Figure 1 (cartoon, each protein chain N blue to C red):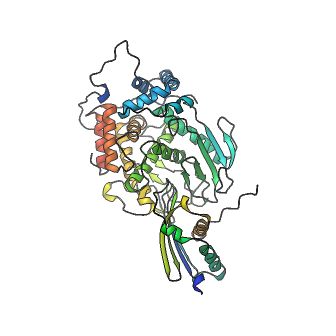
Figure 2: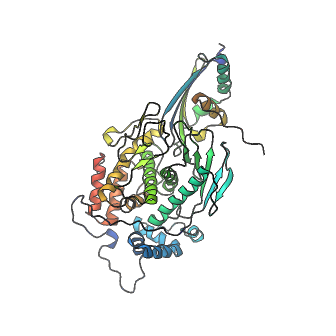
Figure 3: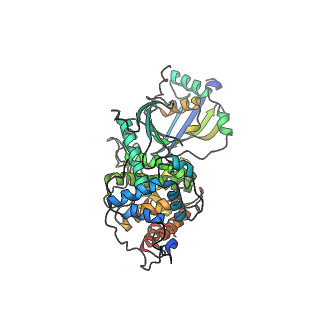
Length: 109
Length: 382
């Protein structure tokens, strides 16, 4: 697989009202081709540098906290981000890895 | 909203500690002559201890003159001279909540469509109506028991958003409104289903406007615990349960029948709320010896909250009667203590509760003794 498409994402979700920790991971090396392509597309859209470089903030009450390990080829990055701090591209990647169905688009006004 | 029926049990005499009692600090050696204006602490005690008619009169008097008297009462109880928010209080009619429930129809796009406003008829949507009722019950506890006019004590509107996201297993306070998910239906029901959940989330707003605890490590666990404490009191007050009758569970009803567990947390038995192959086991400790050092969950705020939760449960059951009466008053005075900072750790907060017990019931009182015992039993020496 080309390095540009070689991704491995680990997500740990903690916090929330329930305070229960969930972990999930996905790797393009292990997924069926269609899923691997989808993961690569989602991961490529995220500006991970932004999250690695931002200073840590204290959490918002009962919001989820996400700890991510992102391997892209030989490059490995780790960061922690609050649910309320994620942009739509990171939120979409996290949702995909954790396996939740995505929210539908809001109705056109 | 007028004050509801009084839920006053006979006040028990706690047996904790030694029996010698000095007068409460602010009243020591003072006598009110027949020419003095009724001091505000008299209204506060009538509101807490009187019969239905007396309570209604005291609350009505506080409401009409709320701006000055409530601020003065707060000053007396907290030892400050600052008078806060007089203008806002003068504008906000105390004793009546202002609830608005909106529906975002499975999206995450705020603010959503208003489906129920204050005083409006039931919407027919379970989540919306449960949120509306839960906001009302939370407002009622804070107003009738603690004379607090909404989250900020200035009539802050109570806004809620239901049907947030898709299968969203959460509810949270975003600083301005409460957001409710519908749960995934496999492990979690809708998050409006539990009254203590609603009370818990709105209490995060109260904490923001009082002690302002940082949401990290021990201060964060205290923040979480305060929300569990007052969330549980909302439920107990609504149901008219004494401390002995209460289940002391947080989030009972939130878990589906697929989950092996009673609730998400137990203040009575931390660590025993659930044990499930999918969710795992309730990780809460009941004692400082089992404090969990972690970086997840903002330093384990939902885990280590079990320790101060259990301290409150122990205090409430040692004192007897209704948990909101004495234990709740001690905790409510503590979160308004200007000596406590957002960085307060367990022992600092516990010392604050002992200080509050002294102010309310006297140095060396049985109530103070119970506070010392309760914290000691969870490994926090005060």
